[in-house]
Length: 170
Image 1 (tube, rainbow, N blue to C red):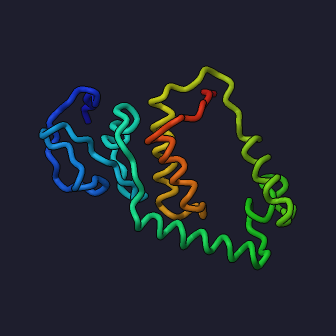
Image 2: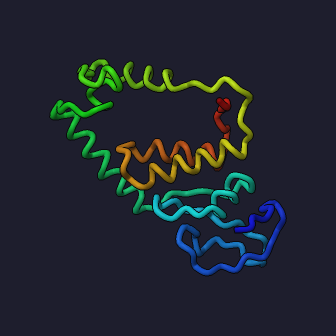
Image 3: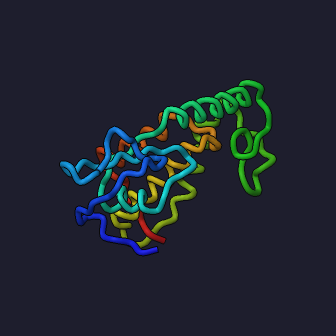
């Protein structure tokens, strides 16, 4: 596959590809940008490059939001029933059999995130951060992580409006 610099305006023929809003296409007339619609299933490399390098707009499909709401409802039922689920109501790794009670969940989640902050190198470029955020939001859109749709929307807002998080390389 040959990649082209997406900053150069090129004529792109719209073929009705999945993940592109048909009402907002770049067809050589007026230079409209394509909105990349995340479904969780069909993010193409060219779309990732357009968002990461070209700053194109991102939105999430209504079907993806519905999937996230359904899987989040499963998470909420597990929490209500106080079932033991790895990383949700239990610790992780060596502490996988240690129960995390409801009143400890917020602190547990905060520490889990802090324990994974390992980057000590230079700051990653905006292109790398944008590409990473797009992949993260698309993973959420798949509907298998149990996150609330608001988290995916927060990531997409950072892509569309900024500011981008500061991310260090390893």
